[in-house]
Length: 220
Length: 285
Image 1 (cartoon, rainbow over the protein chains, first blue to last red):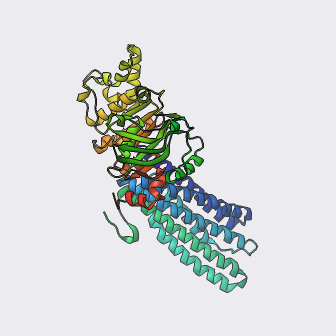
Image 2: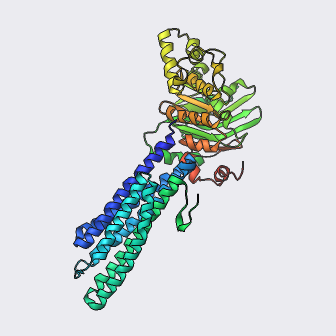
Image 3: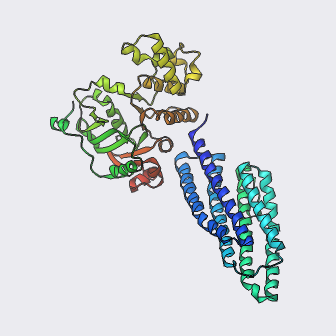
Protein backbone atom coordinates (compact mmCIF):
# COMPACT_ATOMS: atom_id res chain seq x y z
CA UNK A 1 0.00 0.00 0.00
CA UNK A 2 1.42 3.36 -1.06
CA UNK A 3 1.06 6.01 1.64
CA UNK A 4 0.94 9.67 0.75
CA UNK A 5 3.49 10.13 3.54
CA UNK A 6 6.01 8.34 1.33
CA UNK A 7 5.24 10.64 -1.57
CA UNK A 8 5.90 13.62 0.65
CA UNK A 9 9.10 12.02 1.93
CA UNK A 10 10.22 11.48 -1.66
CA UNK A 11 9.47 15.12 -2.47
CA UNK A 12 11.55 16.16 0.53
CA UNK A 13 14.42 13.94 -0.59
CA UNK A 14 14.25 15.44 -4.08
CA UNK A 15 14.34 18.93 -2.61
CA UNK A 16 17.47 17.97 -0.68
CA UNK A 17 19.04 16.61 -3.86
CA UNK A 18 18.32 19.88 -5.64
CA UNK A 19 19.99 21.70 -2.78
CA UNK A 20 22.99 19.36 -2.91
CA UNK A 21 23.47 19.97 -6.66
CA UNK A 22 23.38 23.68 -5.97
CA UNK A 23 25.98 23.39 -3.20
CA UNK A 24 28.23 21.16 -5.28
CA UNK A 25 28.14 23.70 -8.07
CA UNK A 26 28.94 26.48 -5.58
CA UNK A 27 31.97 24.59 -4.28
CA UNK A 28 33.29 23.89 -7.77
CA UNK A 29 32.76 27.48 -8.89
CA UNK A 30 34.32 28.89 -5.71
CA UNK A 31 37.49 26.87 -6.26
CA UNK A 32 37.56 27.81 -9.94
CA UNK A 33 37.04 31.50 -9.07
CA UNK A 34 39.91 31.36 -6.58
CA UNK A 35 42.44 29.65 -8.82
CA UNK A 36 41.40 31.24 -12.11
CA UNK A 37 41.05 34.72 -10.54
CA UNK A 38 37.49 35.04 -11.80
CA UNK A 39 35.80 37.72 -9.71
CA UNK A 40 32.48 37.46 -11.55
CA UNK A 41 32.22 33.77 -10.74
CA UNK A 42 33.16 34.46 -7.11
CA UNK A 43 30.35 37.00 -6.82
CA UNK A 44 27.88 34.52 -8.35
CA UNK A 45 28.80 31.97 -5.68
CA UNK A 46 28.27 34.54 -2.91
CA UNK A 47 24.94 35.66 -4.36
CA UNK A 48 23.83 32.08 -5.02
CA UNK A 49 24.11 31.21 -1.35
CA UNK A 50 20.78 32.93 -0.72
CA UNK A 51 19.13 30.17 -2.72
CA UNK A 52 20.88 27.54 -0.60
CA UNK A 53 19.63 29.31 2.53
CA UNK A 54 16.08 29.24 1.19
CA UNK A 55 16.42 25.52 0.51
CA UNK A 56 17.56 25.01 4.10
CA UNK A 57 14.52 26.75 5.53
CA UNK A 58 12.08 24.96 3.20
CA UNK A 59 13.57 21.56 3.96
CA UNK A 60 13.59 22.20 7.71
CA UNK A 61 9.97 23.28 7.59
CA UNK A 62 8.85 20.31 5.54
CA UNK A 63 10.90 17.88 7.63
CA UNK A 64 9.41 19.20 10.86
CA UNK A 65 5.93 18.84 9.35
CA UNK A 66 6.64 15.23 8.46
CA UNK A 67 7.71 14.57 12.04
CA UNK A 68 4.69 16.30 13.54
CA UNK A 69 2.04 15.10 11.12
CA UNK A 70 3.37 11.86 9.66
CA UNK A 71 4.85 10.21 12.77
CA UNK A 72 7.59 8.37 10.84
CA UNK A 73 8.93 5.06 12.17
CA UNK A 74 12.02 2.87 11.59
CA UNK A 75 13.58 3.49 8.13
CA UNK A 76 11.24 6.43 7.52
CA UNK A 77 12.26 7.97 10.85
CA UNK A 78 15.94 7.54 10.06
CA UNK A 79 15.45 9.04 6.63
CA UNK A 80 13.69 12.17 7.88
CA UNK A 81 16.31 12.60 10.60
CA UNK A 82 19.08 12.14 8.06
CA UNK A 83 17.58 14.63 5.66
CA UNK A 84 17.37 17.25 8.40
CA UNK A 85 20.96 16.65 9.50
CA UNK A 86 22.21 16.62 5.92
CA UNK A 87 20.32 19.82 5.31
CA UNK A 88 22.40 21.52 8.00
CA UNK A 89 25.62 19.96 6.65
CA UNK A 90 24.88 21.14 3.12
CA UNK A 91 24.10 24.64 4.24
CA UNK A 92 27.42 24.76 6.09
CA UNK A 93 29.26 23.47 3.01
CA UNK A 94 27.54 26.24 1.05
CA UNK A 95 28.87 28.75 3.60
CA UNK A 96 32.40 27.36 3.23
CA UNK A 97 32.08 27.70 -0.55
CA UNK A 98 31.15 31.34 0.01
CA UNK A 99 34.19 31.75 2.28
CA UNK A 100 36.41 30.35 -0.47
CA UNK A 101 34.81 32.67 -3.05
CA UNK A 102 35.37 35.64 -0.73
CA UNK A 103 39.03 34.70 -0.34
CA UNK A 104 39.17 34.60 -4.13
CA UNK A 105 38.04 38.23 -4.19
CA UNK A 106 40.52 39.25 -1.47
CA UNK A 107 43.50 37.85 -3.39
CA UNK A 108 42.39 39.01 -6.82
CA UNK A 109 45.31 41.44 -7.23
CA UNK A 110 47.86 39.49 -5.22
CA UNK A 111 50.87 37.70 -6.70
CA UNK A 112 50.27 34.07 -7.54
CA UNK A 113 51.98 31.33 -5.63
CA UNK A 114 53.77 29.12 -8.08
CA UNK A 115 53.79 25.84 -6.17
CA UNK A 116 50.23 24.97 -5.39
CA UNK A 117 50.47 21.22 -5.85
CA UNK A 118 49.12 20.17 -2.45
CA UNK A 119 46.35 22.80 -2.58
CA UNK A 120 45.20 21.52 -5.99
CA UNK A 121 45.38 17.97 -4.74
CA UNK A 122 43.33 18.91 -1.70
CA UNK A 123 40.67 20.63 -3.80
CA UNK A 124 40.41 17.53 -6.01
CA UNK A 125 40.12 15.18 -3.05
CA UNK A 126 37.54 17.30 -1.23
CA UNK A 127 35.43 17.71 -4.36
CA UNK A 128 35.53 13.94 -4.85
CA UNK A 129 34.67 13.26 -1.20
CA UNK A 130 31.70 15.57 -1.40
CA UNK A 131 30.54 14.12 -4.72
CA UNK A 132 30.88 10.56 -3.43
CA UNK A 133 29.04 11.45 -0.23
CA UNK A 134 26.17 12.83 -2.33
CA UNK A 135 26.25 9.76 -4.59
CA UNK A 136 26.17 7.48 -1.57
CA UNK A 137 23.04 9.32 -0.42
CA UNK A 138 21.49 9.27 -3.88
CA UNK A 139 22.12 5.54 -4.29
CA UNK A 140 21.82 4.78 -0.57
CA UNK A 141 25.19 3.04 -0.95
CA UNK A 142 26.79 2.32 2.41
CA UNK A 143 29.94 0.85 0.76
CA UNK A 144 30.64 4.09 -1.09
CA UNK A 145 29.90 6.00 2.11
CA UNK A 146 32.61 4.04 3.94
CA UNK A 147 35.08 4.90 1.16
CA UNK A 148 34.34 8.58 1.75
CA UNK A 149 35.27 8.18 5.40
CA UNK A 150 38.62 6.66 4.47
CA UNK A 151 39.60 9.83 2.58
CA UNK A 152 39.15 12.14 5.54
CA UNK A 153 42.56 11.40 7.08
CA UNK A 154 44.25 12.13 3.74
CA UNK A 155 42.55 15.52 3.58
CA UNK A 156 43.58 16.27 7.17
CA UNK A 157 47.19 15.51 6.24
CA UNK A 158 47.00 17.70 3.14
CA UNK A 159 45.70 20.52 5.32
CA UNK A 160 48.74 20.18 7.58
CA UNK A 161 51.04 20.01 4.52
CA UNK A 162 49.44 23.16 3.12
CA UNK A 163 49.89 25.00 6.37
CA UNK A 164 53.59 24.13 6.59
CA UNK A 165 54.26 24.86 2.96
CA UNK A 166 52.42 28.20 2.97
CA UNK A 167 54.20 29.25 6.16
CA UNK A 168 57.52 28.51 4.49
CA UNK A 169 56.56 30.50 1.38
CA UNK A 170 55.49 33.47 3.49
CA UNK A 171 58.72 33.33 5.52
CA UNK A 172 60.73 33.42 2.31
CA UNK A 173 58.81 36.25 0.62
CA UNK A 174 56.73 38.68 2.66
CA UNK A 175 54.82 39.81 -0.46
CA UNK A 176 53.03 36.45 -0.31
CA UNK A 177 51.68 36.99 3.21
CA UNK A 178 48.21 38.16 2.10
CA UNK A 179 47.66 35.35 -0.36
CA UNK A 180 49.36 32.86 1.93
CA UNK A 181 47.10 33.71 4.87
CA UNK A 182 44.02 33.53 2.66
CA UNK A 183 45.05 30.19 1.20
CA UNK A 184 45.56 28.85 4.72
CA UNK A 185 41.97 29.80 5.47
CA UNK A 186 40.82 28.21 2.21
CA UNK A 187 42.67 25.07 3.22
CA UNK A 188 40.81 25.14 6.52
CA UNK A 189 37.49 25.63 4.68
CA UNK A 190 38.28 22.62 2.50
CA UNK A 191 39.18 20.53 5.52
CA UNK A 192 35.81 21.44 7.10
CA UNK A 193 33.99 20.50 3.87
CA UNK A 194 35.69 17.11 4.03
CA UNK A 195 34.49 16.73 7.64
CA UNK A 196 30.94 17.63 6.66
CA UNK A 197 31.10 15.21 3.71
CA UNK A 198 32.16 12.55 6.23
CA UNK A 199 29.12 13.46 8.34
CA UNK A 200 26.90 12.86 5.32
CA UNK A 201 28.59 9.51 4.70
CA UNK A 202 28.08 8.51 8.35
CA UNK A 203 24.43 9.43 8.05
CA UNK A 204 24.08 7.27 4.92
CA UNK A 205 25.52 4.33 6.84
CA UNK A 206 23.07 4.96 9.69
CA UNK A 207 20.23 5.23 7.21
CA UNK A 208 21.04 1.99 5.42
CA UNK A 209 22.34 -0.14 8.25
CA UNK A 210 20.95 1.52 11.37
CA UNK A 211 24.54 1.58 12.65
CA UNK A 212 25.93 4.49 14.58
CA UNK A 213 29.58 4.95 13.59
CA UNK A 214 30.24 8.53 14.66
CA UNK A 215 33.27 9.31 16.80
CA UNK A 216 34.78 5.91 16.08
CA UNK A 217 32.05 4.12 18.00
CA UNK A 218 30.42 1.40 15.93
CA UNK A 219 27.18 0.01 17.25
CA UNK A 220 24.93 -2.60 15.75
CA UNK B 1 -37.60 20.79 18.66
CA UNK B 2 -35.44 23.72 17.91
CA UNK B 3 -35.42 27.18 19.38
CA UNK B 4 -34.03 29.06 16.42
CA UNK B 5 -35.97 32.26 16.12
CA UNK B 6 -37.64 33.33 12.90
CA UNK B 7 -35.63 36.52 13.06
CA UNK B 8 -32.42 34.58 12.90
CA UNK B 9 -33.66 32.57 9.94
CA UNK B 10 -34.45 35.73 8.02
CA UNK B 11 -31.17 37.49 8.60
CA UNK B 12 -28.35 37.32 6.12
CA UNK B 13 -25.65 34.85 7.08
CA UNK B 14 -23.62 36.43 9.82
CA UNK B 15 -19.92 36.93 9.46
CA UNK B 16 -18.47 35.13 12.44
CA UNK B 17 -16.65 37.63 14.66
CA UNK B 18 -12.94 37.45 15.16
CA UNK B 19 -12.20 34.93 17.86
CA UNK B 20 -9.90 32.02 18.41
CA UNK B 21 -10.79 29.87 15.47
CA UNK B 22 -11.79 32.61 13.13
CA UNK B 23 -8.52 34.43 13.47
CA UNK B 24 -6.60 31.37 12.41
CA UNK B 25 -9.04 30.60 9.65
CA UNK B 26 -8.58 34.03 8.14
CA UNK B 27 -4.84 33.47 7.94
CA UNK B 28 -5.52 30.18 6.23
CA UNK B 29 -8.01 31.83 3.93
CA UNK B 30 -5.55 34.48 2.86
CA UNK B 31 -2.93 31.92 1.92
CA UNK B 32 -5.43 29.91 -0.12
CA UNK B 33 -7.72 32.52 -1.58
CA UNK B 34 -9.33 29.96 -3.89
CA UNK B 35 -10.55 27.92 -0.93
CA UNK B 36 -14.30 28.05 -0.63
CA UNK B 37 -16.19 27.77 2.63
CA UNK B 38 -18.34 24.63 2.74
CA UNK B 39 -19.70 24.24 6.28
CA UNK B 40 -20.19 27.32 8.42
CA UNK B 41 -20.87 26.78 12.10
CA UNK B 42 -22.29 30.13 13.12
CA UNK B 43 -22.60 31.00 16.81
CA UNK B 44 -23.96 27.59 17.46
CA UNK B 45 -25.25 26.47 20.86
CA UNK B 46 -26.72 23.03 21.38
CA UNK B 47 -28.64 21.60 24.31
CA UNK B 48 -29.73 18.15 25.43
CA UNK B 49 -32.71 19.27 27.49
CA UNK B 50 -31.23 21.83 29.88
CA UNK B 51 -27.70 20.56 29.50
CA UNK B 52 -25.66 22.64 27.09
CA UNK B 53 -23.28 20.53 25.00
CA UNK B 54 -21.90 23.16 22.63
CA UNK B 55 -21.22 26.80 23.49
CA UNK B 56 -21.26 29.46 20.81
CA UNK B 57 -19.14 27.54 18.33
CA UNK B 58 -18.25 29.40 15.18
CA UNK B 59 -15.80 28.35 12.51
CA UNK B 60 -15.75 27.58 8.80
CA UNK B 61 -14.78 24.26 7.28
CA UNK B 62 -13.29 24.63 3.81
CA UNK B 63 -14.51 22.79 0.75
CA UNK B 64 -12.72 19.63 -0.37
CA UNK B 65 -10.48 19.55 2.61
CA UNK B 66 -10.44 17.35 5.67
CA UNK B 67 -11.40 19.01 8.94
CA UNK B 68 -10.65 17.02 12.08
CA UNK B 69 -12.52 17.64 15.30
CA UNK B 70 -10.53 16.60 18.35
CA UNK B 71 -10.97 16.85 22.09
CA UNK B 72 -11.47 14.69 25.17
CA UNK B 73 -14.60 12.60 25.71
CA UNK B 74 -17.66 14.72 26.32
CA UNK B 75 -16.20 17.81 24.64
CA UNK B 76 -19.02 18.01 22.11
CA UNK B 77 -17.22 16.82 19.01
CA UNK B 78 -19.61 13.96 18.19
CA UNK B 79 -22.56 16.16 19.06
CA UNK B 80 -21.40 18.72 16.54
CA UNK B 81 -20.78 16.26 13.71
CA UNK B 82 -24.17 14.64 14.30
CA UNK B 83 -25.82 18.03 14.08
CA UNK B 84 -24.35 18.76 10.67
CA UNK B 85 -26.78 16.25 9.14
CA UNK B 86 -29.38 16.86 11.89
CA UNK B 87 -29.10 13.34 13.28
CA UNK B 88 -29.34 14.59 16.84
CA UNK B 89 -32.91 15.64 16.22
CA UNK B 90 -33.78 11.98 16.72
CA UNK B 91 -32.94 12.55 20.41
CA UNK B 92 -35.79 13.86 22.56
CA UNK B 93 -35.55 17.33 24.07
CA UNK B 94 -32.71 18.75 22.02
CA UNK B 95 -32.56 22.40 21.04
CA UNK B 96 -30.16 24.87 19.53
CA UNK B 97 -29.50 28.49 18.76
CA UNK B 98 -27.31 29.85 16.02
CA UNK B 99 -26.94 28.14 12.69
CA UNK B 100 -25.02 25.66 10.59
CA UNK B 101 -24.88 26.37 6.87
CA UNK B 102 -23.86 24.20 3.96
CA UNK B 103 -22.47 26.77 1.55
CA UNK B 104 -25.05 29.52 2.00
CA UNK B 105 -28.02 27.34 2.92
CA UNK B 106 -29.02 26.81 6.53
CA UNK B 107 -29.47 23.16 7.43
CA UNK B 108 -32.55 24.35 9.33
CA UNK B 109 -34.05 26.05 6.29
CA UNK B 110 -37.73 25.01 6.35
CA UNK B 111 -37.57 24.62 2.56
CA UNK B 112 -34.92 21.94 2.98
CA UNK B 113 -36.18 18.44 3.67
CA UNK B 114 -34.02 16.51 6.12
CA UNK B 115 -33.87 13.64 3.66
CA UNK B 116 -32.53 16.00 0.99
CA UNK B 117 -29.98 17.34 3.43
CA UNK B 118 -28.81 13.81 4.21
CA UNK B 119 -28.43 13.05 0.52
CA UNK B 120 -25.93 15.88 0.43
CA UNK B 121 -24.14 14.62 3.53
CA UNK B 122 -22.94 11.03 3.80
CA UNK B 123 -21.96 9.62 7.16
CA UNK B 124 -19.68 6.84 8.37
CA UNK B 125 -19.80 5.63 11.96
CA UNK B 126 -17.38 4.24 14.48
CA UNK B 127 -18.66 0.71 14.09
CA UNK B 128 -19.19 -0.39 10.53
CA UNK B 129 -22.84 -1.17 9.97
CA UNK B 130 -23.34 -2.97 6.67
CA UNK B 131 -26.85 -4.19 6.00
CA UNK B 132 -27.31 -7.97 6.00
CA UNK B 133 -27.37 -7.94 2.22
CA UNK B 134 -24.86 -8.50 -0.54
CA UNK B 135 -21.91 -6.18 -1.07
CA UNK B 136 -23.60 -4.92 -4.24
CA UNK B 137 -26.93 -4.22 -2.56
CA UNK B 138 -25.23 -2.39 0.28
CA UNK B 139 -23.51 0.01 -2.06
CA UNK B 140 -26.53 0.83 -4.19
CA UNK B 141 -29.02 0.79 -1.31
CA UNK B 142 -29.63 4.53 -1.28
CA UNK B 143 -30.23 4.56 -5.04
CA UNK B 144 -32.74 1.76 -4.77
CA UNK B 145 -34.53 3.60 -1.95
CA UNK B 146 -34.74 6.68 -4.08
CA UNK B 147 -36.31 4.65 -6.89
CA UNK B 148 -33.40 3.95 -9.20
CA UNK B 149 -33.71 0.48 -10.69
CA UNK B 150 -31.81 0.67 -13.98
CA UNK B 151 -29.23 -2.05 -13.74
CA UNK B 152 -26.67 -0.29 -15.90
CA UNK B 153 -26.75 2.76 -13.63
CA UNK B 154 -26.67 0.69 -10.45
CA UNK B 155 -23.73 -1.36 -11.78
CA UNK B 156 -21.85 1.77 -12.72
CA UNK B 157 -22.45 3.46 -9.35
CA UNK B 158 -21.48 0.29 -7.52
CA UNK B 159 -18.19 -0.02 -9.39
CA UNK B 160 -17.36 3.69 -9.10
CA UNK B 161 -18.13 3.78 -5.39
CA UNK B 162 -16.16 0.65 -4.62
CA UNK B 163 -13.23 1.94 -6.65
CA UNK B 164 -13.38 5.28 -4.87
CA UNK B 165 -13.36 3.51 -1.53
CA UNK B 166 -10.37 1.36 -2.58
CA UNK B 167 -12.37 -1.84 -2.18
CA UNK B 168 -13.12 -2.79 -5.79
CA UNK B 169 -10.07 -4.95 -6.39
CA UNK B 170 -10.77 -6.96 -3.26
CA UNK B 171 -14.47 -7.63 -3.89
CA UNK B 172 -15.12 -7.31 -7.62
CA UNK B 173 -15.37 -11.10 -8.02
CA UNK B 174 -17.81 -11.55 -5.15
CA UNK B 175 -20.14 -8.59 -5.33
CA UNK B 176 -23.17 -10.75 -4.65
CA UNK B 177 -21.78 -12.41 -1.57
CA UNK B 178 -22.93 -11.24 1.84
CA UNK B 179 -21.32 -8.05 3.13
CA UNK B 180 -21.07 -9.80 6.47
CA UNK B 181 -18.28 -11.99 5.05
CA UNK B 182 -15.93 -9.00 4.81
CA UNK B 183 -13.23 -8.14 7.34
CA UNK B 184 -13.73 -5.21 9.72
CA UNK B 185 -11.62 -2.88 7.61
CA UNK B 186 -13.36 -3.97 4.41
CA UNK B 187 -16.77 -3.45 6.05
CA UNK B 188 -15.80 0.08 6.98
CA UNK B 189 -14.65 0.81 3.42
CA UNK B 190 -17.93 -0.71 2.20
CA UNK B 191 -19.79 1.73 4.45
CA UNK B 192 -17.75 4.55 2.90
CA UNK B 193 -18.66 3.26 -0.57
CA UNK B 194 -22.32 3.22 0.47
CA UNK B 195 -22.04 6.74 1.89
CA UNK B 196 -20.57 8.15 -1.32
CA UNK B 197 -22.79 6.24 -3.77
CA UNK B 198 -25.25 9.13 -3.79
CA UNK B 199 -22.41 11.54 -4.60
CA UNK B 200 -22.86 13.67 -1.47
CA UNK B 201 -20.97 16.94 -1.11
CA UNK B 202 -19.88 16.20 2.43
CA UNK B 203 -18.70 13.07 4.19
CA UNK B 204 -18.95 12.95 7.97
CA UNK B 205 -16.80 10.37 9.75
CA UNK B 206 -17.35 9.70 13.43
CA UNK B 207 -14.36 7.77 14.77
CA UNK B 208 -14.15 5.70 11.57
CA UNK B 209 -11.02 3.77 12.56
CA UNK B 210 -11.39 3.24 16.27
CA UNK B 211 -12.49 -0.38 15.81
CA UNK B 212 -9.82 -1.20 13.22
CA UNK B 213 -6.28 -2.59 13.37
CA UNK B 214 -3.35 -0.41 12.26
CA UNK B 215 -3.21 -1.75 8.70
CA UNK B 216 -6.95 -1.29 8.12
CA UNK B 217 -6.64 2.15 9.74
CA UNK B 218 -3.82 3.10 7.37
CA UNK B 219 -5.97 2.04 4.40
CA UNK B 220 -8.87 4.19 5.58
CA UNK B 221 -6.51 7.12 6.15
CA UNK B 222 -5.12 6.82 2.63
CA UNK B 223 -8.67 6.59 1.38
CA UNK B 224 -9.57 9.82 3.19
CA UNK B 225 -6.60 11.48 1.49
CA UNK B 226 -7.96 10.41 -1.92
CA UNK B 227 -11.60 11.18 -1.16
CA UNK B 228 -10.97 14.80 -0.29
CA UNK B 229 -10.38 15.47 -3.98
CA UNK B 230 -14.12 15.00 -4.42
CA UNK B 231 -15.68 15.53 -1.00
CA UNK B 232 -15.51 17.85 1.95
CA UNK B 233 -14.70 15.61 4.89
CA UNK B 234 -15.28 16.13 8.59
CA UNK B 235 -13.73 13.55 10.89
CA UNK B 236 -14.14 13.18 14.61
CA UNK B 237 -11.29 11.27 16.18
CA UNK B 238 -9.91 10.49 19.60
CA UNK B 239 -6.63 9.71 17.96
CA UNK B 240 -4.70 12.96 17.71
CA UNK B 241 -1.99 11.37 15.59
CA UNK B 242 -4.67 10.39 13.13
CA UNK B 243 -5.99 13.94 13.03
CA UNK B 244 -2.44 15.09 12.30
CA UNK B 245 -2.00 12.53 9.53
CA UNK B 246 -5.26 12.97 7.67
CA UNK B 247 -6.58 16.48 8.15
CA UNK B 248 -5.92 19.89 6.65
CA UNK B 249 -7.76 21.80 9.37
CA UNK B 250 -8.26 20.91 13.01
CA UNK B 251 -10.80 22.12 15.55
CA UNK B 252 -10.04 21.48 19.21
CA UNK B 253 -13.08 21.35 21.50
CA UNK B 254 -13.02 21.24 25.28
CA UNK B 255 -16.13 21.02 27.47
CA UNK B 256 -18.33 22.20 24.62
CA UNK B 257 -16.16 25.16 23.70
CA UNK B 258 -14.16 25.58 20.55
CA UNK B 259 -10.73 26.33 21.97
CA UNK B 260 -8.83 26.63 18.71
CA UNK B 261 -9.37 26.10 15.02
CA UNK B 262 -6.73 26.36 12.36
CA UNK B 263 -4.46 24.63 9.90
CA UNK B 264 -3.51 21.20 11.19
CA UNK B 265 0.17 21.84 10.62
CA UNK B 266 0.05 24.91 12.82
CA UNK B 267 -2.15 23.27 15.44
CA UNK B 268 0.30 20.40 15.85
CA UNK B 269 3.52 22.37 15.54
CA UNK B 270 2.79 25.65 17.30
CA UNK B 271 -0.78 26.06 18.50
CA UNK B 272 -1.94 29.48 19.57
CA UNK B 273 -3.57 28.35 22.80
CA UNK B 274 -1.83 26.88 25.83
CA UNK B 275 -4.82 24.57 26.36
CA UNK B 276 -4.39 23.11 22.87
CA UNK B 277 -0.67 22.64 23.45
CA UNK B 278 -1.32 20.83 26.71
CA UNK B 279 -3.93 18.57 25.15
CA UNK B 280 -1.93 17.54 22.09
CA UNK B 281 1.20 16.97 24.16
CA UNK B 282 -0.78 14.71 26.51
CA UNK B 283 -0.54 16.99 29.54
CA UNK B 284 -4.26 16.92 30.10
CA UNK B 285 -7.36 15.33 28.71
